[in-house]
Length: 164
Image (cartoon, rainbow, N blue to C red; front, side, top):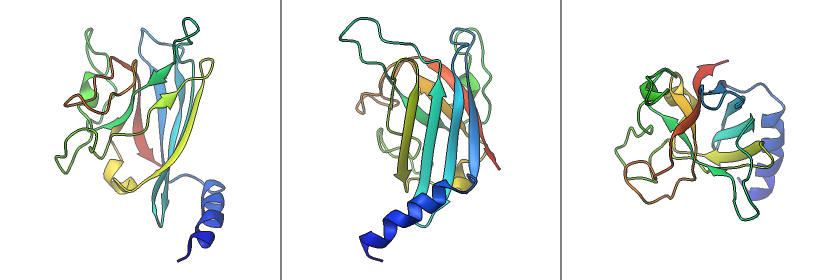
């Protein structure tokens, strides 16, 4: 397949219903966060589209609101007083790879006045492999170095991935 035939296929993919979706909601500390993460199975991998609102806005001219964004291996957005999403578990990592090569390591979300939109293609997992897992938004950007999870701060928001 030549690369010129790839681009029209992605446009068609985004016009159809996603294969799976996570409805993301913030913790009690971040109740204004909400949005969706959609997963589209493609011949090239999984297209991920995230639309998030209510993210913390910048504080000062040099603050850049960048948020860690991962798929975690647990199946629940529940937890305890110290970690409201403790049952989301750790980064999804079925192949036992080092960070940032976990299947669940995703590109960060860049905030823009409380909103974020991100779309990317990955071949680290199939939609079938992530059904029932969770999507987490963290308070700080992933440093893509620190083990095991990139020093990306507290879990601010969570959503369980469901097949549509």
